[in-house]
Amino acid sequence: MALSEFALIARYFAQARLAGAGADLGIGDDAALLSVPGDCQLVVAADTLVQGVHFPPALAAADIGYRALAVNLSDLAAMGAAPRWYTLCLTLPAAEAAWLADFCDGLAEAAGTTGISLVGGDTTRGPLCISVQILGTVKAGAALLRSGAAPGDGVYVTGTLGDAAGGLALIQAGGAGSAYLQRRFRRPSPRLREAGLLAGLASACIDISDGLLADLGHICDASAVAASVQLPRLPLSDALLAAFPGQAQDFALAGGDDYELCFTVPPALTAALERRFGDAGCRCSRIGEIVAGRGVRCIDANGDTLAPKKVGYEHF
Image 1: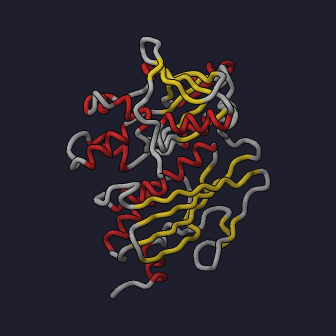
Image 2 (image 1 turned 180 degrees about the vertical axis):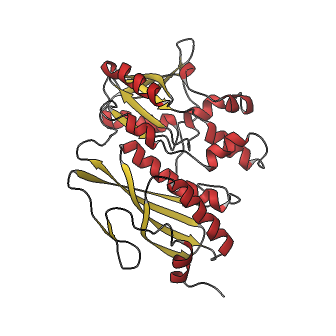
Image 3 (image 1 turned 135 degrees about the vertical axis):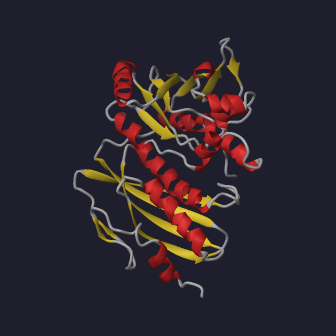
């Protein structure tokens, strides 16, 4: 017997909908009631994942659930915000019990120890599509923005770049090859811990979803500056270099789906940044500088400006 919409919610989202702190009313009414501390601002982001556009049709349900929440957690990390609640709009071709159970397991794994809780949403029938709206809080005036970069600031990224694009290429080719790269696509790691280390240091920040060049370009546009990226400084994993020696740099520049942080730091705070990340055991790499002008320039090992083959992912 097919489940009704409300029976589906009760059976598969019961654990995820446990109200966390500040959720005065969660799932079960027409809307949620949430309380935000008086010294905080509410941070809101949303992402939609469509089968065949944002993930391959064969991707496991648990991976889809994980990605749906993780990419939104990455948006909060880019703002320096703490995750609090989320809503889920789930469009399904059919309510398959095994698929839904695995999907919810993926959501729960992505939530991890964040304390985030599901407080609303919708379910409907149609082509597989997942929309998550996430809500977080940040101390008033402390949010990381795209608009604060200035000439002389260093440009940094967390982790390694291009791994997810390499992983997606392997998945689309049949799933053989590096399990590490494939997991980097299936299970992106929102850099919430690293974001916490940037408080008082970063002048601008963004998460890398569409590709380094595209997203660093957003910082440049918002800050009315340019950026110079030194290609030899790009942090590339051994796995990516082994699997795609001729494409690794292109994947790093424009592949997308890394969900690492790209941020800028004034020269006077560079030592504090390196000390803070070193003490925490977190990785960040300086890949370039903010300069006067517009746009992003790529400089190769010979000091020549290189025109990239692609800037990043575009929906249209």
